[in-house]
Amino acid sequence: MPPERDLFSKFDALIAEREALMATGVRDPFAIVMDEVKSPTLAIIKGKETILLGTYNYMGMTFDADVIAAGKDALDRFGSGTTGSRVLNGTYSPHKDCEDALKEFYGTEHAMVFSTGYQANLGMISTLAGKGEYIILDADSHASIYDGCALGNAEIVRFRHNSVEDLDKRLGRLPKEPGKLVVLEGVYSMLGDIAPLPEMVAVAKKHGCMVLVDEAHGMGFFGPNGRGVYEEQGVEDQVDFVVGTFSKSVGTVGGFCVSNHPKFDVMRLVCRPYVFTASLPPSVVATAATSIRKLMHAGEKRAHLWANSKRLHGGLKEMGYTLGTATPQSAIIAVILKDQTQAVALWQSLLEGGLYVNMARPPATPAGTYLLRCSLCAEHSAEQVETILAMFKASGQAVGAID
Ligand code: PMP
Image (cartoon, protein in one colour):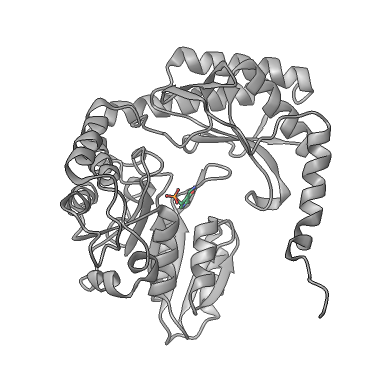
């Protein structure tokens, strides 16, 4: 018998790198436990009250009284889970109501709820473009978009991040006949920058492509109705598919796609990540529906979130931090550090002081960068933002990240 090959050996370098980092005595940035969560902006971590600046709870809906009541009611009336696929026994009236809420929110003809946003991208992208067709995507696309490409049989073409010129050039080289899907994101989540959608969409349409925009980080916050960057930038009529998630502004879990395409509903039969998985628990879709309808009237929250984002961006920049964007473009503000050691040191110092932010590292980040990703919430008070800035000043100086 040949000797058994250890399939884990390909991860040895990563295991060694992590062990070396942990041996320096730092806490593991990827093993944080929230022991208690008091509000969208406060948690207890290892006995310490900690401000949360590393969640996607942009609109602070997780503790909304109406959202919680809707979830409890659905739990009582429909039980804890569906134990089945949407196309068999797993569609309950709360799933249909949630899709109705999405249609109202987006003003579209069709809405389809998936079990996560990851699966929505996986399903839509792998199913829309098939063998002999093309998917054209931004090089900095989210993992779920890349995985959607990997799951399908289409030809994959990448263009330089946010480069309208490169998109045009690459589309110009493709054969005219086959179907093509251009995949864009409203907000790119690592650096918090937004896409120039009108220019991108115009180029895509010039070359006869359909367009899908992932508004995971734009929903709730951008546009007069909170639909996303594509609404704010006025290209609603030209975007064929919008993918989104309930795990950010909506404040629960789940994913979706909305569209006005007349044949859209055939997706329910042919999209494997929709068909071959269990549907969301009714309590989850009931909380999502309530939250989505409330987000339609959240203009004040949106304004406060913008104010928070501008203040944090301006304050950090003034201290001398290098940020992901020159101006505040979204609710994500990325603080770029020199290397992993400095990123972990600052992350740990902030945590010990009572502030949680997300640490991001390659391959999730572009160009080998190590960054601390701050994401603001509409429920952060102006006073909390000042406290956050003071913490960044003290910790940044302590670890030598700023003067
Ligand atoms: N798209 C983007 C751009 C995301 O950032 C994420 C999650 N971080 C997703 C899709 C997946 O969403 P979900 O958490 O619902 O799986």
